[in-house]
Image (cartoon, rainbow, N blue to C red; front, side, top):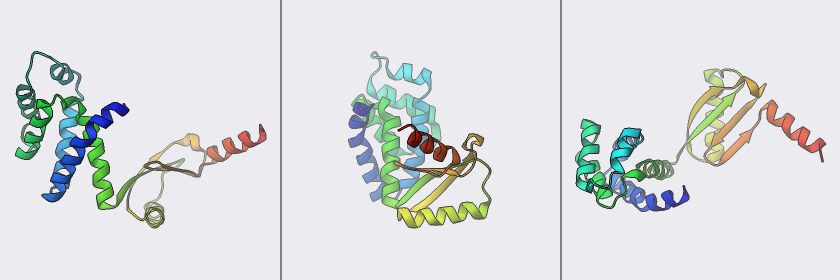
Length: 178
């Protein structure tokens, strides 16, 4: 996995810089997600790995499957990937692109898992507090997990804040076993 990310990084960086300079970050992000989703299909993966097909043919096929969802610039990007036999890297390129975009926009997606549904005002307060702590614009996505018993589990990139009752009980049990 690390090797694929290493191979994908220069393409993602080039795509990000082009999209940023042309002020089309959101468009590129959406289009790359579409192309990555299409390449995730098993049938398309089999075609992309066919050694009998050349790069231009694969790029044209992928662009045709995506249809009007891709503009000329993204189609050209796919053509470059195909010429270099890197179309299979689209999921990694898309993930790296999203990371560059979030860093540039100073935003972060935060997953909040709670034992019960959070009220809208509580979600807003949590987003405000996290925004101050992380010094970024926060996009909160909530879900529920009754196994937490109470409290919340917050994931923001590499940061994990476990304020759940289950997490506290696990820490207590680990401390007692020493």
